[in-house]
Image 1 (cartoon, rainbow, N blue to C red):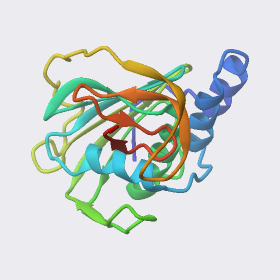
Image 2: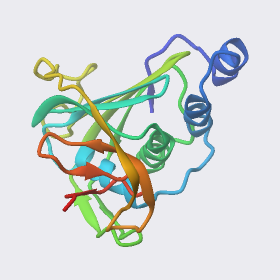
Image 3: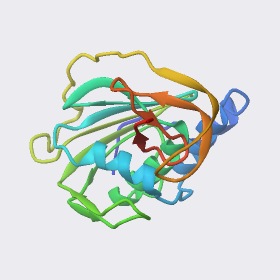
Length: 206
């Protein structure tokens, strides 16, 4: 690990901002401190999006937001915030880092990721990861490990394209055909598909 920060410790962050932290960001700090969060189907899927394409991505976790901009599609893709601790925990483990504080840079991959539940196995090549942990936010940048080896900062991605997030309220509970969890609130994608908050997978409503 190459430390790029100014000596800010996780203890400083926890003590100074514990009152203002959201529950999700508390878990992010726990992951940064080395507490392991188990990979599940949803977080494995998000990590595949983040790592499988060499064009990389930029991640922002703040308050109750978890946003990713991909090099292959720079729109702000929004995910359920509870996935963030699992994603960070896996990146630290795969990078060989036990904890992170301030800013750090590491190499991850190539790696084969085993199947988790019903989500299939997948793999990715060598990547460079930049992690910046601040008092109220976490940013992660991932780039091609071959083209950016030795770079001190990630190459900027294209300017973001912002699409409004649409949430629909249904008159009665609708079970997700993927995991059978019923809900009345779903996130709706631009093509009309609904996203299940439990399993993170999308489906079309008949």
